[in-house]
Amino acid sequence: MGEGNIIAGIRDGLGNDAIVVATKNNGKLKEFAHALGKLDKRVLSLHDFPEIPDIVEDGDTFAANARIKAKTTGDALGVPALADDSGLRVEALGGEPGVYSARYAGEGAADEENNAKLIRELTSIGASCSEQRLDDGSRQLSKAQFVCALALYDPATGEFVEAEGTVDGVITDKPHGAGGFGYDPLFWLPQLGRGMAELSKEEKGAISHRGDALRKLLPLLMKQQ
Ligand SMILES: O=P(O)(O)OP(=O)(O)OP(=O)(O)OC[C@H]1O[C@@H](n2cnc3c(O)ncnc32)[C@H](O)[C@@H]1O
Ligand SMILES: [Mg+2]
Image 1: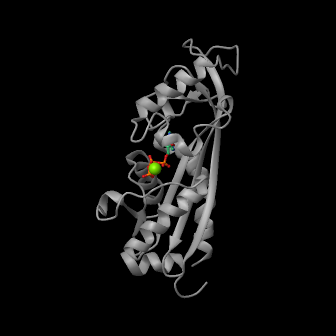
Image 2: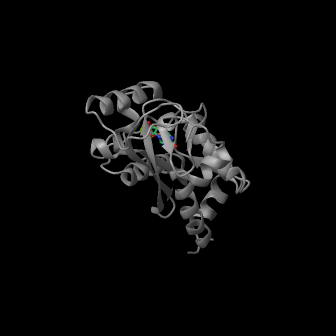
């Protein structure tokens, strides 16, 4: 691509050192700041642009919602915007809460309320994916997968660059670790023998759905240069 490609758009609009991430989630933001900081990119978020009204995430898929957030933000600011729509698919719940992960326990629910509802729902149906207890006695309730859809939208061309990442794990009935955000304390990684919230930012980025999606997206962006 020539004129108006996404990288050039970022350069023109904000300077080559900055990128807008269309999120209000501070947990995501820290992970993007860490990952993109390594590429010398300063991350701006929706907290920096309070004039942009709340975005309605009414897509049926993670990818659709990521596109909605990226387009609304990119069109409002006139510069490219990157958006992340993510969530948890829980096997024993038929893939729920999925795109409803943020509002599982109700609109504006806190992470703690969503986590409490998840354990409540799984225990109420007697879910169990392994007889084996973890060392601390916690039960393994269901297999689960974190999904992250990324979309970068350039208002100059109307084009999107997209990628999706996943990570598999198990939901436990007790929290492990104090790091991360959202459902991380309940997400156990059997392959590591550790919980997602026990990992450092570096370690989480190396295995997470968001890290996976970013590793797929970045080469696509570089191609556009
Ligand atoms: O829409 P924005 O402003 O980006 O922020 P949000 O928190 O509403 O984000 P989503 O709509 O994408 O909803 C994602 C939900 O999935 C959860 N989630 C996403 N990524 C996660 C991660 O890496 N670890 C734990 N939970 C995560 C998160 O806590 C939310 O409940
Ligand atoms: Mg949201």
